[in-house]
Every structure is written in C-alpha cells, then in structure tokens.
Image 1 (tube, one colour):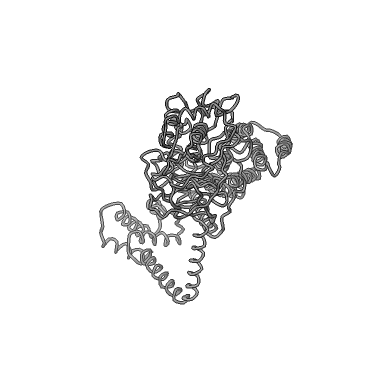
Image 2: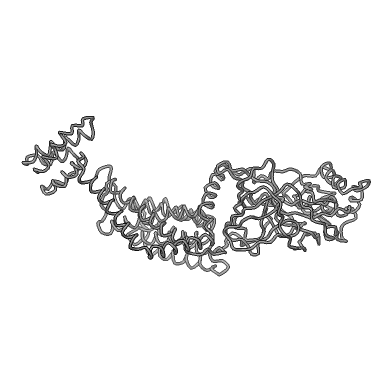
Length: 622
C-alpha cells in the first residue's frame, strides 16, 4: 500500500467520530452532565477498539444495557419535560453504540442517532451557531453515506488521495444543492411566531439581571448577571453611556413598584437622531429605545403592532419571539407631559424615619430643582454603595437600606429616591430599562446585554421631567468579563441576522409576487424567450466547440492525440508515460514529435508555430 492511500473503513471511522462530536457539541446545555462524561469516556475507548479490536463486549450485554437505560431515561418524559429526556436518551445510545464492535449496520445507526440529535438541537434553538453545526452535519453525513456505500459494495479497499478528494467534492456538491433547496423553502414558507420549545425560560425563578414587569424590594440573595444580548445598535455613536427606556412604573404598593397607568399618546413630529436596532427575542412585549424616544419609523420581522404610552415608552401587542429590526429616532430633550396625581402618591405605611428624612432634606428648599439636588447630595455624601448582594433584613426594606446597610442595587436607590421626592412634594416616577452599551469593534455597532438592566427616577421640575439617577457608578463584573472571542462571535451572528433573518413576511410576499409576475411574463413571451435562450445556448456551444476542438492550440493537439491513442489501447495521460506506452509501435515517432511539441509550448518559451502546424499534420496520420 502506498502512503497516499487510505482504507475506506479508516475513513468511515474517522468521519463517524467527527459526526458524533458535532452532535454531542450541539446538545451541550441540554443533556445532563453525567451523560456527557459517559459519552466522552466512550469516544476514546471506541476509537481504540475500532483500530485495535482488543476489547470485545458481548453484544447481548450492550443491548440489555441500552434497553434498561432507555427505559430509565424516558421515564421522566412528559409534555412539560420533553426535550431533556430525549436528549439524554440519544446521547446515551450514541455512547453505547461506540462500545460495540461495529459493522455497516452499526455505522448507519450511529449516523441516524446523530441526525436525530441535530434535529433536536435545532428544535430548541435555531441561530447561526446551530446553522454552522447543521452545515457540518450535512457534509459529514453525506460523506459517510458515500463511503459506507463503497464499503458495502467493494469491501475495505484502499483509496488514493485523488479519489478521496473527489468524493469529498461530491459531498460538498450535494451539501450545496441542499442549501439551494433550503433557500427556496426559506423564501416561500411562512415564519412561526413562537419557538418550538422554549427550553431556557422554564425552571426555577432566580435573581437574574434583566427587565421585569415590576420592581419588588425585599428579595434576598446574590443577583446573577445575565450576559445574553438583548439588542444591537447601528447608525449612532455614543459619547457617554446611553439610557434605554422600557417602561414607566407609577405606584408604590407593599414594597413593590407597579404600573397602573397605560394611557396611549401620539408620537411626536419633532426631528431626532435616527438609528437602527436588531432586537433579540425577548418573549415579552417591551420595546427598549434610546432615551428619549421620539418616533418609530419602521419595524421589520413581525406584523405585531406597537403602541406608545404616556411617559414616552412603547410596547408591542404580542410578545416578541424572533429577531426583529427597528428603525427609530430619539432626542436629547426630556419629556414635558404634565404630571398626574399618581406621581405624588405615597402609601400610608411608609416608616416615620423616612418621612422625617424627607422633611429634613426639604427644609429651606423652595423649588423642585432644589429639592431634587438635596436628594442627590444625600446619596452622594452619606456613604451609599452599589451591591448585587441583597442581605437579610428586619422591618421595612427601604428603611433598612437608608439607615442601616446603605448598600443595594439600582432598585433600592431608585425606589428611595422616588419616595423621598414624593414626600417632598416633587412628582416622580420610576423608569425601567437599560444603562450602557458595549462597542463591538469587529462589526462597528453596539450591543446591550441583560446585565445592563437598570432602574432610575424621573422627577418633574415644574417644566419638564429630568433624569435623577442616584445609583453610584458601577461596572458589573459580567460586563467586564465579555471577551474578544464573544465579540467576534456576536459580529458573525449579527452578519447572519442582518442578511438572512431580516427576511420578514412582507419581503416573502414581495418575492412571491415578483416570482409570479416573472412566470406570467415568461408564459406570455415564451416563444421569444425560448428563441433567445436557443440562440444564446447555440452561441455558447459554438464558442465551446471552437475553443476546445477547432482552435489549433497545443492543449487541443494533445487532447486529440490522447483520444486517438485510445484505439491503440493507450490509456495514459502523462506525456512521458504516453511516449513509453507507444514504444515499439509504428506510430512511435509521430507521437513522440507531437508530445514534445506540446511540452515545449506548455513548459518552455519556445513558440514555433510551424512546428505546431507540422504536429497537427502528423496527428492526421495516426
């Protein structure tokens, strides 16, 4: 066997394990850890056994283990818990199959399990990450099927590198063809508004950073920073960290801020700075926009309507379950809507210590602006600190924060600020949203992550609402930990969103209408179009014949020689081997002259047209 040759079985084994690794990687985060450990242990053991064949486990034991494992793993299957048991079962079966002494049927079964695993991962989440896995799975699967077919019909033969490369090219061709059909279906099929399985939103509720419908004080524990991307921003530069308005909370009740008002208001006709965002699926109705939002110009990717409410925030009518593109404008001028009575409401159970603090701060302050300044100075000078750890407390959470711990997250700072201002007679409201944006230099845009979720206060100074953010400056650890690799990945994902996911229903309709119009035009002018196509194809064919057959070039000379030599039983292609093959034949001298002419024209600077003409004359005599 030459070094450049490799056995089909070796190729099958290598491709099989690459397919397995691709599948197992795609199911990461879905399958239980102990099953990952099992399958990662099975992979090296299976490779060793496939090449050395020293560990032989009776198939009956493997089958019994597989059956028992499937029964145990699927016992927890239910409509509420569907994905994880199936994922666990597939990974377990793959690990079991790796331990077997494999024949052709076993390789087919492993390939089937791998495809099922990829399909399961796609059902849970379909983004560019899974697209890349899916592309690799198609390529590996087609390659494996081709080699298995060779193995089944020809046995464990050895293939030269050239043959191996050709087979891989065929696999790539099939893979490319499948994506042509995929694009066709991508265009004509409607999008679903909800994911097949919303795996990552189920389970126990924890203290996780992000937007919520209300602000509740009194929770205890460490707030976990969610670094997942909420939105991406294009077409605007920030000289300082931006605020993103999501909602307005107006009422404090039982240590909770809630929204009791939802008064629609018209959008402003004022001019503003235009920008674009790509909003990730939030599975909620909120619509984060740069403070202060003026107008939404366009929404792509959903037919869901939006409404602007008093306080300058927007909501969709339905939860957003797929990426959407929004074009909007914002202004640096704060809102001027008149304050309502609810913005000065204070519950009766506010502790006296907080009431007395408000009286102390407002003493001597005559205007709302002075009172606002007093509150800001209080939080700056009294040693308050930002913290994600919410301690246990006794009594009222606001009282404990203001007079005992003096540390907390933005919810405590904003809540205390709003209550103190209301006690001082200044209308105020809580604004929920995000604060900040990270520049992704790899894609020239900004990203906003859930860990940037923030709450601040707007207070009415008698003329307009001004932002009052008493939370001390703080950069969460989760934001500092964002790596360059994460930004590169997000840039790739953003390219995918901008160029593929942005196909919304309206664009699909447009493409279908255009296609329909083209078909009608083709039918109407079919005779002219067919005549044009016929003339075009004839021209192309004529040019091809001229270039490949009629034109007298060294390449055509040599090509015609090889065709003529086939009747003499010569099947060689290389010039020297052609000369060697015709030694002792009557045509030896003619062939040698033609071959040398071809070589001189192709590999040297000699260009004797008379020699080429003579070679063509000799070709007629062969």
